[in-house]
Length: 164
Image (cartoon, rainbow, N blue to C red; front, side, top):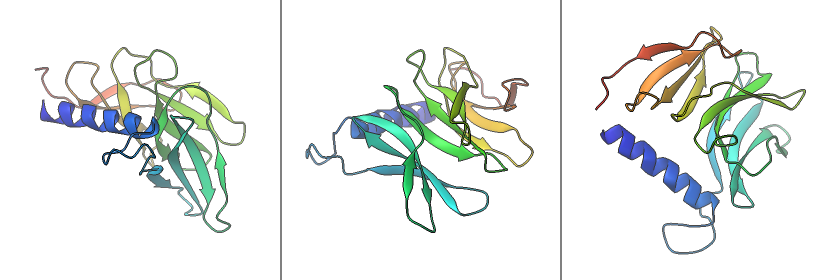
């Protein structure tokens, strides 16, 4: 229960910051670049930044210092994680149903593909060396750890807790 409350507070805080709120009452966001993820080769950094009051993903070339926005639209895109080969990013977004699902972004084609589709919230992805994507979900009304293959198949409960 505590984890669910903490997670809900974190998501609320991230959305408030993206919307231009800060804890000090200043209307200017104090947190502008969040959740850094270093690419497997160590040359790039994926992160989220508030753009027009929405969280968007960016990729920064660490050698040149240049950044490029890689997601757009009216949704919030956050929690990036790199594929083991560095060609794709998995991320969480509220882009289709209002809840949070996982999506993959092919960086060379700029193609976004929905990975999960559940009424619960799927977030905090991590892409393992074996190719599986691990993430948290409250789809059973209790936060649990799941894994899925990058094509959306093979959903597995990894760590299960009983529902409250």
